[in-house]
Image 1 (cartoon, rainbow, N blue to C red):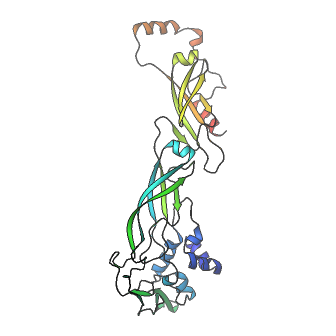
Image 2 (image 1 turned 90 degrees about the vertical axis):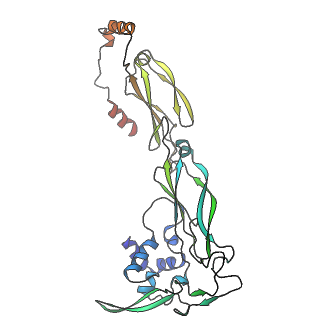
Image 3 (image 1 turned 45 degrees about the horizontal axis):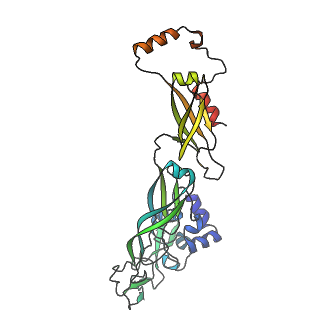
Length: 335
């Protein structure tokens, strides 16, 4: 993060972009990922060197370009959104109810009572900054910081708005439509630019950060773009062969079980998985065969099985080419 901040500080074009647009101009609007944004990094620089404004001003001679000279940015909002496997598979449109700070409708966001005006700050003469001399190991340095009187705005309120008490914003509930793309994963973060909080007395609103949570499916387990279903079959069904219906994402599918199917075999239902978030098609559904062994037998059932105990075809005779469960899984997931 420090290297990234230095890159911006030492590049005139990037510096101008940050001065004009803040961290949004450096990082873009809608996307995933967490981590520290540019404002967080720059605020740490400001804390270290005693400022409240942009580090550009302190180290590159901003000359009055404090927070009052560029739009301040509000805080981000973070919410968790639970999605079913069906919604994740195809993508979904949702409406999210959030409480966020918006501009006061009475004063328009400046915090002043209707009919009253704002005055130029007497402390900073409207620049939004104050300068002070700092003694360091290298000698004296001039440090620029946010004006404590006007909080960097360059203006002070004569009469406060009665609706918002001079803050210039109100907490309101809002329903925001959001389109969730197919293939999102647990913990993925989507960002909606400008849907966060408005800062006090005007400025650029922060972002709405949507963190994805997957609701566990009743039958299926997700693995990337594939889903896995454990199918329990009786010894008789796998010995004689059968047809069974298995659940899929949003429906069902009928599959054929060949006679002699071994426990651990994996059947692939192509295209029955989840859409890839990058648009590279859909995954598959893998059906893992498990042979269920009865835990209790009647006298008649036991007698029938005793007759088969020594039968030739009931003696295990694995082939060298037969793969165990883990080998089969590795083979399937490697394509």
